[in-house]
Amino acid sequence: MARCTAPARGHRSAAAAANCPACGSRYARSSYYGGYGGGYSSDQSHSSPSYSSSKSSSGRSTGGSGRRTAKPRWSGAGSPVWYTPEQVQALTPVRENVENLAVSQPDLRDVFLCHAWDDRQSSAKELHDLLESCGVRVWFSEKDLGLGVPMMRAIDKGLVNSRIGIVLVTPAMLRRLPAEGVADKELSALLRRERLIPVVHGTTYEELEQVSLLLASRAGLSTAEETMAEVAAKIAELVAT
Image 1 (tube, rainbow, N blue to C red):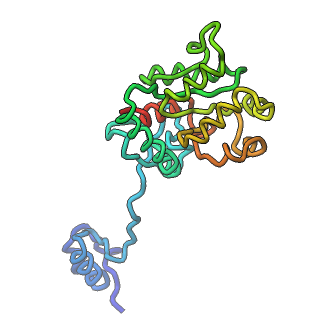
Image 2: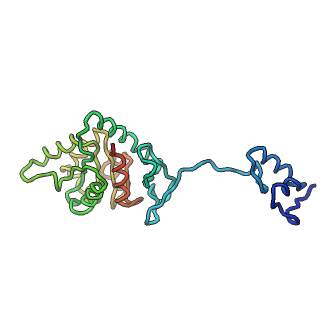
Image 3: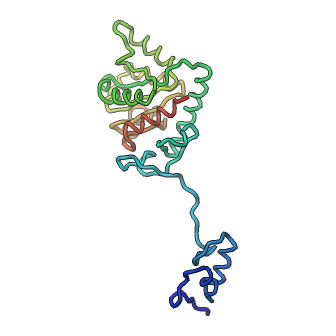
Protein backbone atom coordinates (compact mmCIF):
# COMPACT_ATOMS: atom_id res chain seq x y z
CA MET A 1 0.00 0.00 0.00
CA ALA A 2 1.32 3.45 -0.95
CA ARG A 3 2.38 5.51 2.05
CA CYS A 4 1.82 9.24 2.44
CA THR A 5 5.02 11.31 2.33
CA ALA A 6 3.55 14.20 4.35
CA PRO A 7 5.09 13.12 7.70
CA ALA A 8 8.55 13.19 6.14
CA ARG A 9 8.40 15.84 3.44
CA GLY A 10 5.11 17.68 3.94
CA HIS A 11 2.63 18.83 1.32
CA ARG A 12 3.62 22.47 1.22
CA SER A 13 2.90 22.88 -2.47
CA ALA A 14 0.57 21.51 -5.13
CA ALA A 15 3.52 19.71 -6.69
CA ALA A 16 4.40 18.00 -3.42
CA ALA A 17 0.85 16.74 -3.02
CA ALA A 18 0.74 15.54 -6.62
CA ASN A 19 4.01 13.60 -6.21
CA CYS A 20 2.86 11.83 -3.05
CA PRO A 21 2.15 8.10 -3.80
CA ALA A 22 -0.86 8.11 -1.46
CA CYS A 23 -2.32 11.56 -2.12
CA GLY A 24 -1.49 12.19 -5.76
CA SER A 25 -4.64 10.61 -7.18
CA ARG A 26 -6.89 12.52 -4.74
CA TYR A 27 -5.13 15.77 -5.64
CA ALA A 28 -5.73 15.11 -9.31
CA ARG A 29 -9.46 14.64 -8.68
CA SER A 30 -9.65 17.82 -6.60
CA SER A 31 -7.91 19.81 -9.33
CA TYR A 32 -10.44 18.51 -11.83
CA TYR A 33 -13.40 19.46 -9.63
CA GLY A 34 -12.42 22.97 -8.76
CA GLY A 35 -8.69 23.55 -8.40
CA TYR A 36 -8.38 23.05 -4.62
CA GLY A 37 -4.66 22.78 -3.78
CA GLY A 38 -2.64 21.96 -0.69
CA GLY A 39 -4.10 18.47 -0.22
CA TYR A 40 -7.86 19.31 -0.49
CA SER A 41 -9.81 16.62 -2.29
CA SER A 42 -13.14 16.28 -4.02
CA ASP A 43 -14.23 14.11 -1.08
CA GLN A 44 -14.22 17.15 1.21
CA SER A 45 -17.77 17.94 2.34
CA HIS A 46 -19.08 21.43 1.55
CA SER A 47 -22.04 22.82 3.46
CA SER A 48 -24.79 24.54 1.51
CA PRO A 49 -25.04 28.34 1.81
CA SER A 50 -26.83 29.38 4.98
CA TYR A 51 -28.68 32.54 5.92
CA SER A 52 -26.37 35.28 7.06
CA SER A 53 -26.42 36.12 10.75
CA SER A 54 -26.18 39.50 12.39
CA LYS A 55 -25.71 40.44 16.03
CA SER A 56 -27.07 43.49 17.77
CA SER A 57 -25.01 45.64 20.10
CA SER A 58 -26.32 43.58 23.00
CA GLY A 59 -24.93 40.40 21.44
CA ARG A 60 -28.41 39.14 20.66
CA SER A 61 -29.26 38.09 17.12
CA THR A 62 -31.62 40.59 15.52
CA GLY A 63 -33.29 37.65 13.80
CA GLY A 64 -34.24 36.01 17.07
CA SER A 65 -31.88 34.50 19.64
CA GLY A 66 -29.08 33.40 17.33
CA ARG A 67 -31.30 31.48 14.92
CA ARG A 68 -30.72 31.48 11.16
CA THR A 69 -31.57 34.87 9.74
CA ALA A 70 -32.76 36.08 6.36
CA LYS A 71 -33.49 39.23 4.38
CA PRO A 72 -37.02 39.75 3.02
CA ARG A 73 -37.44 41.49 -0.30
CA TRP A 74 -38.67 44.74 1.33
CA SER A 75 -35.52 45.12 3.46
CA GLY A 76 -32.82 47.18 1.79
CA ALA A 77 -29.41 45.67 1.10
CA GLY A 78 -27.75 48.10 3.50
CA SER A 79 -30.24 47.55 6.31
CA PRO A 80 -28.86 46.21 9.62
CA VAL A 81 -32.21 44.51 10.35
CA TRP A 82 -32.43 40.72 9.98
CA TYR A 83 -35.37 38.35 10.29
CA THR A 84 -35.93 34.67 10.99
CA PRO A 85 -37.33 32.69 8.03
CA GLU A 86 -40.51 32.24 10.08
CA GLN A 87 -40.87 36.00 10.46
CA VAL A 88 -40.39 36.54 6.73
CA GLN A 89 -43.11 33.99 6.00
CA ALA A 90 -45.54 35.55 8.51
CA LEU A 91 -44.90 39.16 7.49
CA THR A 92 -44.93 38.73 3.71
CA PRO A 93 -48.77 38.77 3.36
CA VAL A 94 -48.89 41.87 5.57
CA ARG A 95 -46.31 43.55 3.35
CA GLU A 96 -48.34 42.71 0.25
CA ASN A 97 -51.36 44.44 1.81
CA VAL A 98 -49.21 47.46 2.65
CA GLU A 99 -48.02 47.71 -0.95
CA ASN A 100 -51.56 47.42 -2.34
CA LEU A 101 -52.92 50.06 0.03
CA ALA A 102 -50.03 52.39 -0.73
CA VAL A 103 -51.30 52.50 -4.31
CA SER A 104 -55.05 52.53 -3.69
CA GLN A 105 -55.11 54.62 -0.48
CA PRO A 106 -51.83 56.54 -0.22
CA ASP A 107 -53.04 58.83 2.57
CA LEU A 108 -53.57 56.09 5.17
CA ARG A 109 -51.61 56.20 8.39
CA ASP A 110 -49.00 53.44 8.69
CA VAL A 111 -49.92 51.73 11.97
CA PHE A 112 -52.81 51.47 14.40
CA LEU A 113 -51.42 50.58 17.84
CA CYS A 114 -53.82 48.47 19.88
CA HIS A 115 -52.88 48.19 23.54
CA ALA A 116 -54.30 47.73 27.01
CA TRP A 117 -55.22 50.93 28.85
CA ASP A 118 -52.78 50.07 31.65
CA ASP A 119 -49.87 50.11 29.17
CA ARG A 120 -50.61 53.53 27.69
CA GLN A 121 -47.80 55.31 29.57
CA SER A 122 -45.30 52.45 29.70
CA SER A 123 -44.68 49.75 27.07
CA ALA A 124 -47.26 51.10 24.60
CA LYS A 125 -45.72 54.57 24.75
CA GLU A 126 -42.25 53.08 24.38
CA LEU A 127 -43.25 51.23 21.21
CA HIS A 128 -45.07 54.30 19.89
CA ASP A 129 -42.05 56.54 20.46
CA LEU A 130 -39.68 54.05 18.84
CA LEU A 131 -41.91 53.71 15.79
CA GLU A 132 -42.21 57.47 15.38
CA SER A 133 -38.45 57.85 15.69
CA CYS A 134 -38.23 55.50 12.68
CA GLY A 135 -40.59 57.72 10.71
CA VAL A 136 -43.71 55.57 11.16
CA ARG A 137 -47.08 57.35 11.38
CA VAL A 138 -48.87 55.78 14.36
CA TRP A 139 -52.45 56.05 15.62
CA PHE A 140 -52.05 56.08 19.40
CA SER A 141 -54.88 56.70 21.84
CA GLU A 142 -52.81 58.95 24.09
CA LYS A 143 -52.45 61.56 21.35
CA ASP A 144 -55.24 60.78 18.87
CA LEU A 145 -58.17 60.31 21.22
CA GLY A 146 -59.15 63.91 21.86
CA LEU A 147 -61.15 65.21 24.80
CA GLY A 148 -64.89 64.90 24.25
CA VAL A 149 -64.51 62.56 21.26
CA PRO A 150 -66.47 59.29 21.62
CA MET A 151 -63.87 56.56 22.14
CA MET A 152 -65.35 53.88 19.87
CA ARG A 153 -65.89 56.35 17.02
CA ALA A 154 -62.26 57.48 17.26
CA ILE A 155 -61.02 53.90 17.37
CA ASP A 156 -63.12 52.89 14.37
CA LYS A 157 -61.73 55.84 12.45
CA GLY A 158 -58.18 54.91 13.44
CA LEU A 159 -58.64 51.32 12.24
CA VAL A 160 -60.17 52.32 8.93
CA ASN A 161 -57.42 54.85 8.25
CA SER A 162 -54.38 52.67 9.02
CA ARG A 163 -52.58 50.18 6.81
CA ILE A 164 -51.81 47.63 9.52
CA GLY A 165 -52.63 46.97 13.14
CA ILE A 166 -50.15 46.20 15.90
CA VAL A 167 -51.48 44.42 18.98
CA LEU A 168 -49.20 44.85 21.97
CA VAL A 169 -49.78 41.64 23.94
CA THR A 170 -48.79 42.21 27.57
CA PRO A 171 -49.97 40.76 30.90
CA ALA A 172 -52.34 43.75 31.13
CA MET A 173 -53.80 42.92 27.70
CA LEU A 174 -54.29 39.29 28.73
CA ARG A 175 -56.21 40.43 31.80
CA ARG A 176 -58.48 42.75 29.82
CA LEU A 177 -59.32 40.50 26.87
CA PRO A 178 -61.70 38.18 28.76
CA ALA A 179 -63.66 41.23 29.95
CA GLU A 180 -64.57 42.03 26.29
CA GLY A 181 -63.59 45.67 26.67
CA VAL A 182 -62.41 48.11 24.05
CA ALA A 183 -59.25 46.12 23.37
CA ASP A 184 -61.33 43.05 22.49
CA LYS A 185 -63.42 45.04 19.99
CA GLU A 186 -60.26 46.44 18.39
CA LEU A 187 -58.82 42.94 18.07
CA SER A 188 -61.95 41.60 16.39
CA ALA A 189 -61.76 44.30 13.72
CA LEU A 190 -58.04 43.81 13.16
CA LEU A 191 -58.37 40.03 12.83
CA ARG A 192 -61.04 40.36 10.16
CA ARG A 193 -58.88 42.70 8.11
CA GLU A 194 -55.95 40.24 7.83
CA ARG A 195 -53.44 43.03 8.54
CA LEU A 196 -52.48 42.19 12.09
CA ILE A 197 -49.12 41.74 13.82
CA PRO A 198 -49.01 40.65 17.48
CA VAL A 199 -46.06 42.02 19.46
CA VAL A 200 -45.67 39.85 22.55
CA HIS A 201 -44.04 41.70 25.45
CA GLY A 202 -43.56 40.48 29.02
CA THR A 203 -45.57 37.32 28.39
CA THR A 204 -45.59 34.28 26.06
CA TYR A 205 -47.62 32.82 23.22
CA GLU A 206 -48.49 29.91 25.53
CA GLU A 207 -50.13 32.33 27.96
CA LEU A 208 -51.86 34.10 25.09
CA GLU A 209 -53.34 30.79 23.93
CA GLN A 210 -55.17 30.54 27.24
CA VAL A 211 -57.00 33.78 26.41
CA SER A 212 -57.26 33.97 22.60
CA LEU A 213 -56.44 30.97 20.39
CA LEU A 214 -57.20 33.03 17.29
CA LEU A 215 -54.75 35.78 18.16
CA ALA A 216 -52.13 33.27 19.32
CA SER A 217 -52.36 31.55 15.93
CA ARG A 218 -50.98 34.68 14.25
CA ALA A 219 -47.20 34.65 14.05
CA GLY A 220 -45.66 37.94 15.08
CA LEU A 221 -42.75 39.47 16.97
CA SER A 222 -41.61 38.98 20.55
CA THR A 223 -39.42 41.03 22.87
CA ALA A 224 -38.28 37.77 24.46
CA GLU A 225 -36.22 37.23 21.29
CA GLU A 226 -35.22 40.81 20.42
CA THR A 227 -35.38 44.27 21.90
CA MET A 228 -38.33 46.61 21.53
CA ALA A 229 -36.13 48.82 19.34
CA GLU A 230 -35.45 45.90 17.00
CA VAL A 231 -39.16 45.11 16.84
CA ALA A 232 -39.90 48.75 15.95
CA ALA A 233 -37.22 48.69 13.23
CA LYS A 234 -38.85 45.64 11.61
CA ILE A 235 -42.29 47.23 11.67
CA ALA A 236 -40.84 50.43 10.19
CA GLU A 237 -39.31 48.50 7.29
CA LEU A 238 -42.56 46.57 6.81
CA VAL A 239 -44.69 49.70 6.31
CA ALA A 240 -42.13 51.78 4.39
CA THR A 241 -43.28 52.60 0.85
